[in-house]
Amino acid sequence: MNLEYSVSDSEQHKMATNRFIDLANELKNQGLDPALISGSIMTASSIYATYVAAGNEGTLEPTGIDKVVDLYRRTLEHYQGVKRAGLEGQTAQQGTAANDSGEQSKD
Image 1 (tube, helix red, strand yellow):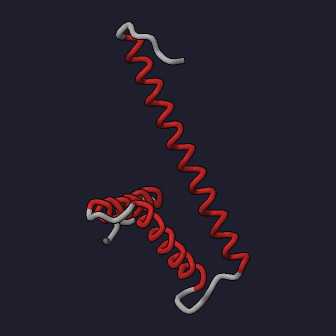
Image 2 (image 1 turned 30 degrees about the vertical axis):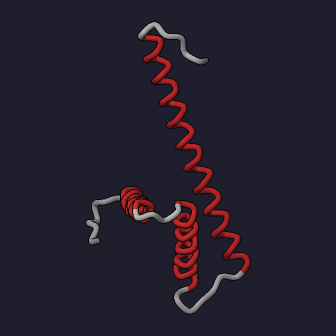
Image 3 (image 1 turned 60 degrees about the horizontal axis):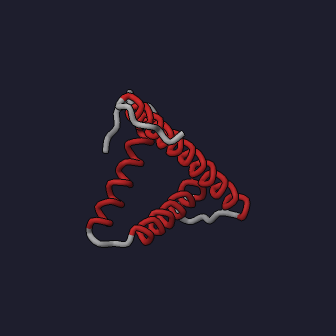
């Protein structure tokens, strides 16, 4: 994939993430267990994070491992917050639609 310079880092990140999700869904549709796929993605991420930090011939020291773990944790926490906010927004929209139709919302 050849990306133009006008595409922001954020958009490139989103595009790359979506490609991994597409691949994961493709593997799931081929019958692989989603937990196995998730573990495989985590292993691939570990391998690539090591490559980015230390190259093909290097390894991470314990402090480097801690940095990767901390980054992964922050990323996971961020995504959970985004997902929660989206779910809460859906619930609020459903409540508004229910109120508009005369139904009682579950507040």
